[in-house]
Length: 105
Image (cartoon, rainbow, N blue to C red; front, side):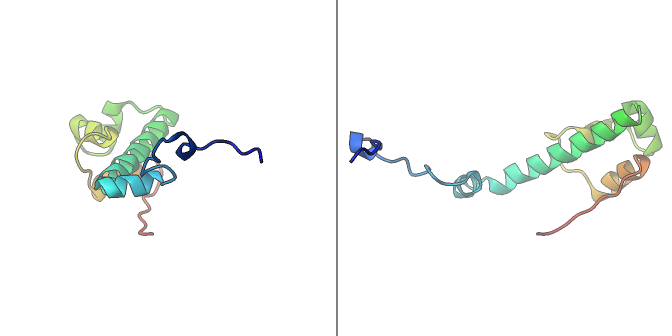
């Protein structure tokens, strides 16, 4: 029989996370929700940035159209910055001709 040797065949113990999903690993480490929140914010910031570029809107112009400060817009576009309100997202979406859709799955 010609089978490939496994780690166990070489006396190497199997790592407990081999074969697990990233989500299950992050959940086990207790950081899944934190990583998901950052990922969601990164996607939203990227989408807003892309829409601004398509409309050729500078940050200053976007902030003015949103009736907010440039600092608030910078927080919206920075995934590492704190929380962003749905109201702020809604104002950005309106300026960009988009809609905000929130869904619990």
